[in-house]
Amino acid sequence: MTSIRKISENIYYLGVSDYKYTKFENHIPIPTGMAYNTYLIADEKTALIDTVEASLCGQFLDNLSEVLKESGKSLDYVVVTHMEPDHSASLFRVLELYPNATIVFSKKAQAMFYQFFGDVKVNELIIDEGSVLELGKHSLEFFSAPMVHWPEVMMCYEKYTKTLFSADAFGAFGGLHGNLFDSEVEFTDSIIEDYRRYYTNIVGKYGMQTNRAIDKALKYDIKTICPLHGYILQKEIGRFIELYRKWANYEPEVNGVLVIYASMYDNTKNAAMELAKMLKDRGVKKVEVKDVSAQDATYLVSDTFKYSDIVLASVTHNNNIYILMESYISAVVALAIQNKRFYFIENGTWAPASAKLMREKLAALKKCELSETVVSIKSALNNESREKLVELADEIANNINK
Ligand SMILES: Cc1cc2nc3c(=O)[nH]c(=O)nc-3n(C[C@H](O)[C@H](O)[C@H](O)COP(=O)(O)O)c2cc1C
Ligand SMILES: [Fe+2]
Ligand SMILES: [Fe+2]
Image (cartoon, rainbow, N blue to C red; front, side):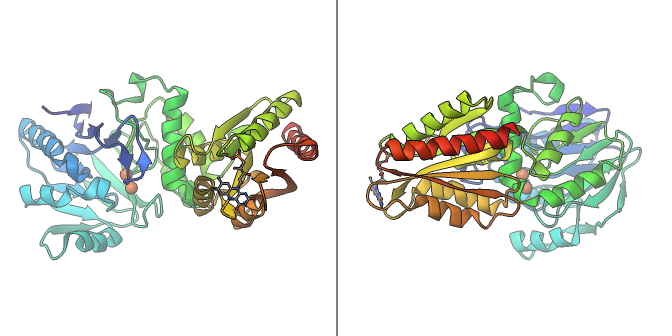
């Protein structure tokens, strides 16, 4: 069984979608699987662009040998956009099977190649900014996209078909479920969320570098984007350039409030829900309340990029922040999120301390406002803390509605 699809006259899709693994990078939930895309240009010369995750190597190699057999060609080049193992783990297997092929990579990727594969002998071609690989009618022009999302990333533009091979940029979580082109699927909110959650958690820290890479890419006339995960983009290119600009600039997509609560026995949850109701009463249209324990932090990180205002409500737990809230905050800080307003609600039965602790952690973020108002709850909301909650609701509604 092969999963080859023709993209244009001489370009083939050889990728594999996996539905067995439930976690990407061994920690990020992928409930709808994951696609590992790779492409072959079969012109006078042939060039394979990247390989796949080690566990999917068999299916991918079947695809490769089938396409080469049908086109009556051998493999001339293997282009490496970057050395992350989800695309490079099968690289050496390919070079063993096609020993005459030349590996095409940047100087930085070359060093990583030997770090991963040890002292092996391969044919090499080092490419740099502006290098062109001629394949016949088709040619690949390379440009660097450092930190999107590894330091050695090279994207390339195929001039004849106006195709951008964008490495991990414009990728998504989720298998392709028998489809390939964006025109074959409906881009529902949940598919967009697969793109947002992928970008924000994988590339999110490197907004400035993402903008630079997009600037470089947009110098070309792009008709097709072939990323290493997710669908091939054609009709949706405009939408994703716009979304990537927003995400890279840490611009909220929604002027609204995300309330994340951490609660063991529902008292903190009740306060979060009451706040949501107060916000609705004050005309705030977009409010979403989420239990920090109900989903993986990667979903909350994605929501955090999306919303302008974030309320964090946490119990105090062993004189600390509730562990899952702490882990979410660590992720947000590690991604250096900007342009958010954060607000705090704490609960503690004997010594509430979580608001101060959450604020201290978030103080590392640039261009974020941390509200001075603290709703401090002793076990359960009472008149005094409810008054403070009203004050908080007024403050948030003012910020949203201005
Ligand atoms: C295991 C455990 C540890 C706690 N540690 C603290 C603490 O260090 N300081 C404090 O003021 N309250 C502490 N509490 C109380 C909670 O912060 C909180 O007041 C209580 O769970 C009610 O909130 P909830 O209904 O939202 O869970 C602890 C509760 C539990 C179950
Ligand atoms: Fe990658
Ligand atoms: Fe990847």
